[in-house]
Length: 113
Length: 114
Image (spheres, rainbow over the protein chains, first blue to last red):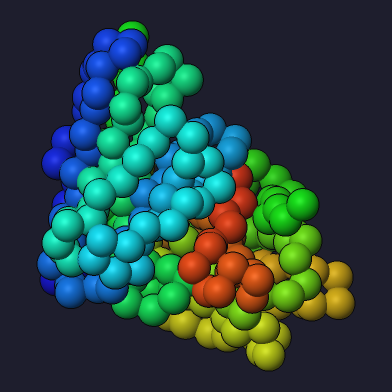
């Protein structure tokens, strides 16, 4: 069974903290994505990666960075967490371009206080 | 700008009835349209997709219809079951994105009444 695993289901962090969200996939997929999900706004793409050490900005990259040192792992980093980054974060992976047949993790609900 | 929108944020149907979830999109140059289902506490799950050169595609109890003339996408669920209760997202993949960027709609919550 294919799997995308996010390291935490719930996180509470303080304003200004550096936050790491980890994602691991076991499907040997080339592409990995980070989205945030907010009510009424759907899923918005933060960053994606189509290969190890490669990364591309999505629609809302400000305040975030990513790291992909290994094919199976894609990390999202909040350099200095702010309250407007309180959200549900979803990681996904896919073999094909465009996220067709994308597989999502269960999500990390991050609260910044 | 590019956007994918939904006509109704909430849909309530009786168990056993058919459900139709509608979606309007604005980018006429997209290769794929996709429907995802998100159950409470889970990430979105791929249901079905359709290429831009098709107007209908059927899966198990689901049918996706694409009307490019009016830029409309719909998901039909036959004999709706309680397990179909979820949020459904339509999504499109514009050609201009190189196939990487998926644009999601805001979602429709489907309630199935017993």
